[in-house]
Length: 352
Image (cartoon, rainbow, N blue to C red; front, top):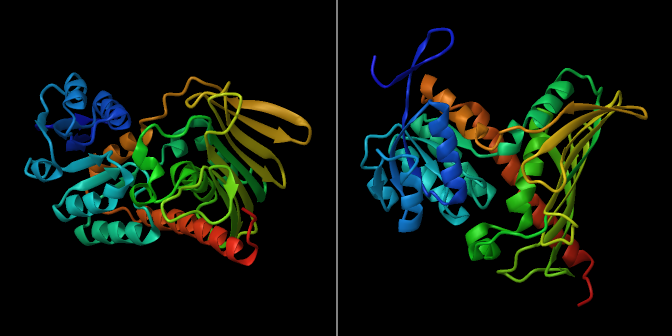
């Protein structure tokens, strides 16, 4: 057989031919992880920046280099990896899906739940595999914590505390333009927090949402183009769990970032937290009463695992995976955080 990979069990699987749309830092990182996995052929790259093209070509010297999505779709591809600004995600996903390609997209899949539903509908209509780079699910720490929850080692999880503070904030201007980004730190960082909470609990329904957002240090209604740089929200879930999340850009955090996901159960607790302000190194700990046990230590090369998991599925089947429909619940929750803040400002105006 040609263009195949062989698993440890001797089963031959097809190696998908992938195109890469956008190879800035994160797009190139995911491309490198996929190439290193041996699961895919990097067949083509679309990127308008000659500097980025030059950097990507060192990892994929045989890939065809083009500049646009339309050109990329002219190649003989099985799937596409999208790492472009957020405003482009939904339309580019739909175009690729309707062309018959499977899609793996950077988060957020869309700026609103409506955009996400449109992409999900296109994936279902085309019967093509859809994945999103919600990468914190794939840390060893969160994988273990989810297993503990599902096996009821923690009992009933009654509360979840989630934190993601980035002391810098994004470096690209479009992140600060609502039309381009869909929002601020909630859609950039909070999306990961919401996803790991709902995913760890097997996606219970979100019953109620309350929130307060700050923009430039000011509490109150943001202008039409303003985005929040600090957010705090509470989610009430149908299974009785209360989720508290906080996220920010540019916070005086005393380190590069603070990332923490703590799950409080009736029989124990567990936490994933970053080490020494690192964006990449995490530990997991378990709690019972006043005792504490280290469960996972770094190093853990997790950043490309979401893409690799998608490529592994793609090598077996190109068809739509219904678990992608959970992406709507995450985007709906983000929408509700923004709406809850707007309602709170209308009911209780804050002083200028």
